[in-house]
Image 1 (cartoon, chains in turn cyan, orange):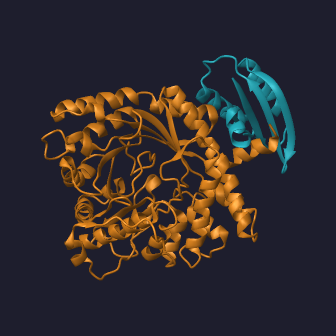
Image 2 (cartoon, chains in turn orange, red; image 1 turned 180 degrees about the vertical axis):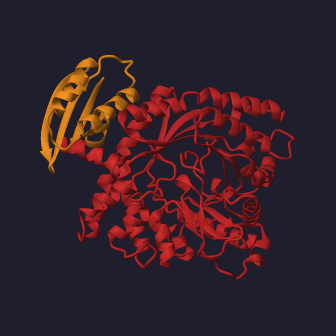
Length: 89
Length: 447
C-alpha cells in the first residue's frame, strides 16, 4: 500500500538521514520525496510504499513518534487515499 | 499531490479538530422477537455480538492507517418497543440490560434504540417502554433512549408529550445524568448515527454502517480568512469546507463498511461541536460577525450556515441522511456556554434557532423544580416547530435537582458543562392536562 509520510519541524542536521535510515530498516520503499521550508519550518513529504500487508500502522506510527521526538520534528504517516479523497473528485 | 493540500489536511486534523464523530452500525432486531422475553434477549445479545464483533477493531485500524480520529463507535437497533411488544413483560429493563451488556462487552461508546414511535398513538409495547424509561436510564450506562411524539404527517401526540414531561422529571430525580441519554423527537429519522437519538428504522436494511462527520473548527478557521467579505463569500467558503469534511466521512464509511462486510448507508452532514476550544458552532456564528451568539442576527447566520453545510456536503458523498444540520447543544459548545453566562443567549432564542437548523433544544440544564407540565410544554413547542416546518426537532432537556439559575453543572467528556438556564415561570398545566392529538397540519397555503 502507498502512504504519505510527512515530517514537519525546525530544520537541523540529520532529519532526512534519520527518516531514510528508519524506513530502510523497515524495508519501506521511498517512491517520491519533496522538501521545502514553509513558514520557517522544515517540511518534507515522502510518498512511500509498504510492501508487507501485515504492517501494523499503530505500531509504525508509535515508532515514528519516537523517532520524531529524537530528531525534534513531527512525523506522521497516513495512507494516501485520505488526501485524494479530500482534494480530488 | 501538492504539498499545500497535504499540509491543509494535516492542519485540519491536528489543529482544527477535524474528526469523524461516529461510525454507527445499525442492526435490525426484527428477527429476534419472541413472546418469551428471556429468549428474545438471548437472540438480541447474540445478534449484536455477532454483527458488531469487529466494529471497534475496524474503527481503530482506520484511525491508525488514515490518521483521522474516530471519536465514537456506536450501535443503533430497531426500536425496542416494537421488539418487546410480543412479550407479556410489564417493564422492559431486561431488554435495556441486554443492550447495555452487549455494548460493554464490544467496547462501543453507546447503543441507541431503546425507543418508541408514538406520534399518532400507543401500540402494545409503547407505553410500557415509556414507563420503564426512568429506571432504564438510571440503571444502565450505555443505553440511549428516544421517543418520537410527533410528525408532519400525523400531528403531535399530546398524551405522550404529557407523559414525557413526567418521565424526564422522574429520571432527573434519580440522577442528573439520566436525561443526557434521552431525546424526545418530532419527525425522527431512521438512519441517524448520532446519540442519544439513534435507532435503526424498520425500513432500513438488516445491518448498515452510517457515519457522522464533524468539523466546526475547520469551518471557523476557513471563515477567519474571509473577514469582512460578503455573505456570498461566507456561504461559498462554508460549502467548500463542508465538501472536504464530508469526503473524509465518505472515505471512512466506505472503508469501514467494506471491512465489516455490511452495506454503507449514509453520511450525516451535521456540524457537531465539542466543549474543546476551537470546536464550537457558536464561534462560527460569531466569526460571521455577531459579538455574541444569541444576539439579533443569530437565526439568519445559522440559517446560512446550516444550508451551506448541506450544499457543500451533498455532492461529496453517495448518500446523505441522518439529521444533517448544525447542532446547537448548549453544554457541548464552549461558545454557547459563554453566551449563556454573558446573558446574551436564552431558551427563547435557542427555540427560534431550532426553526432553521437541526436539531432542537439540546443539552440545556434547567432548574430541578421546573414543573413536569412546563417541560411537556417545551416539548410541545419544539414538536410544533418540527411538524409545521417539515423537519426533525428534538428536546434533550436536563432538570438539575437543587440547582438554581446560573449555577454550573458538569457532565464530563463530550457532554461538557452547562449553566442552569431560566424557564418561563407561568404555568402551561391546563393545556398539557387536555391530552389528545394535535391534528396534522395542512400541506398547502404555506405562510
